[in-house]
Image 1 (cartoon, rainbow, N blue to C red):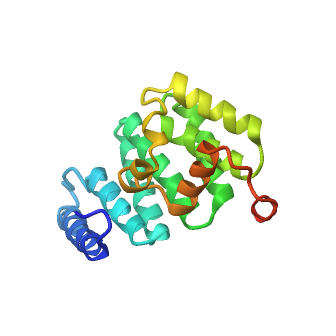
Image 2: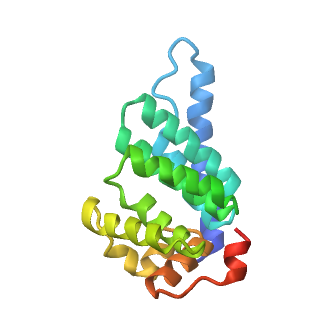
Image 3: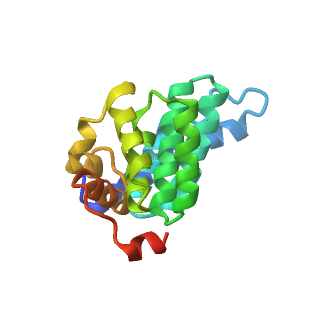
Length: 188
């Protein structure tokens, strides 16, 4: 699906919804043998498409369900990736403190994942907490599996990793070491 074409993202949501409904219908039709259930990757994919349409609350629901399924199936890294998407959806919906809390918890549970550390660096920077921003960034660069190199490319962050625009802006300010505005700090 195209990166910037909203009609293609809407089409993706429709396709993923049909697939999810088929799984759910199959589970209802076979109560004694529910099969494998909904594929959590498809929930993540639909969440990503919903996020691209700015429907962060709906995306959050999909990411949460995917996280629960992955956790139940003991696919802990996949659960962590879904949790990171939850945090991003919270940031995207303006629920910054909840997004921070989600990313803080995830950075402790799965410290090898870069996304939460980089998101925290961007958010800490935006609220004027320079020391914690630098600590999170350094950790992401030196102690995570992915490192921080890709996160220096804001086009990648926005269009491939698909972070919400507000958080991409905060990361850009951090990377350029632009001082956060007093209005921005007070408003958070």
